[in-house]
Image (cartoon, rainbow over all chains, first blue to last red; front, top):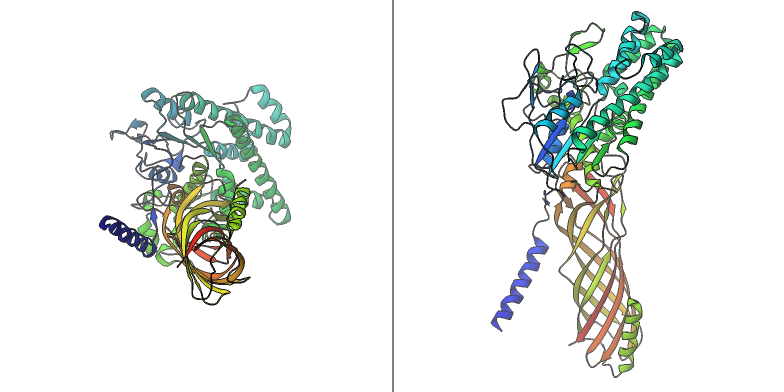
Length: 385
Length: 222
């Protein structure tokens, strides 16, 4: 009897505690699947510090999106490569699995270009495939192609100046001389079409690397970013404004600008369409629609907590040979930005924390957070988070 | 199938006859089970969020009990008591595919006045009633998915709270006085509730819950 009474009292007490206790929230932070290692391959947007800095505003907590995703699984990242000033050496710090390098491309054609240069994203993937293995507790994040698209646009814009020399060279990395010759003979329509053909071939190459060095090596949780609409970046908006000005401004300029923007977007879409077709319904891959996500952020910044999605937060330090502004990431620290809010901004010292862009091409830490949230949504939908 | 069984049981109980009256001054203590189904009409999560980020709250079942005090032969005061329901909160709208965002416990405290038709001695007494409910939400637990899609991490997870809130309740039911002091009670209640969910990121979401509850109980008159 005593025992029963005790039980009743205990029950009543627990009900009371349930009713009165804990209206504040708590969290069960255990992800849906266990991830013990995150491997990253790509370009500047995912580089954890190959050059000694990240391609965003420098702060002590400026996690880039890959690092934020890793954090969702309780993991951290560090750069596998270190730039020596001339080449890329392995980081002496053991256990680093972020292979992404600023300037990384699907096809690297710049200084020191070679089939073994880790500035080729495919080389990064092949390098890990040689030294390591994949298991079910590995998460892989791959991005690429953005710099290749920028190269294509640059070569296209240089056609009047260099008689299509650089364009022919770039196209030649993936297409046959016959294809290129026919296209160049076809004038602007031919060049527009060959751009899409090139971008499709680029997506094929990108996917083939992912398949050979990641999927076929046993990885079962692979995040693949599609190509963001780089035409929305401040850098490309300036390029487009330059096209408008070169056409005499006014209605002609507006038309020329719109035509070029549509052309570049069509090229990016060609890449993304082919990449999606290649990935298909592969359960092992979470294909992130970075293109649409980034477009939405730029089109409706307030919805995403952005106060500015057009102006870079970092100060301009010079003008490049292409006539576009130059920024200096190592000097663009959060402290420096907070100390000097530009006229008219809101948020006081935190003004830059709601900007989308750090320089003309890269997101702020908050921009990275928005991309992490975009990826997390896909991971949750796949039952991976 | 379930409703047929229930109906059968009711008929069997009714035919038992010889029920005792529930007249003025009687106190009936009852116990049973209930299932509460929120009919959620979610607003959009405030910025920063994907446009059209909504939530849904799933149904939950629980044992319930309660006390009815017959003030007159026809008017009863009903105070249901239960340990609270644990509801799953899932994504909807733009985040319909992300699954479980968390769980939240709800303890509805309701006070109802019934009007029971028929005589105090009737075997079958349908009733209608109205009252007020105060829903206390407690112990919200958010998931890793919730943290992920709102920019949180295990070290700094996104936490959820739901504002406790009140609203009017309507009830329709039937009491069958079975035999001796025993009775059976079946009721449907509808409560009109609006709450605000808040995230530790500073975002909020207005949500209409308007739950319907189906309750079955066996009562004993003292």
